[in-house]
Length: 112
Image 1 (cartoon, rainbow, N blue to C red):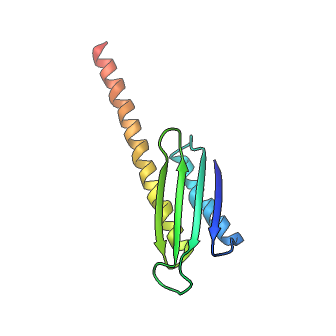
Image 2 (cartoon, one colour):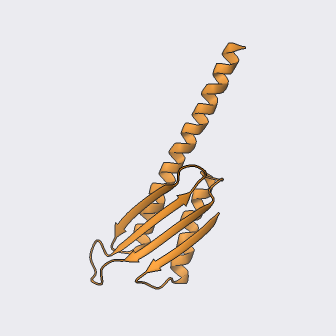
Image 3 (cartoon, helix red, strand yellow):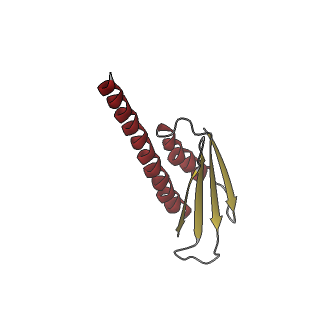
């Protein structure tokens, strides 16, 4: 899965790039067919406050894409929460898909 990182208002450091690769790379276990992940980190305020950074993560999947956005005082903190949101949504989709597969195979055995 490709991970594209775009920053506005701040410099992409090696530490931040590695953190994005680690956090968003974990998502691949729940969505092995994911095509690409787009991560956008924006600094929206020059003054230190609770809404200084916005992190938006878009996971491109076959069919519908998944996205999450988080506002925070630090880019790493916002990235952690956004990655957790995406991971939780993908885990839920995978669980539903596996339950549907199990339910369908049980129905097929009953008919046979």
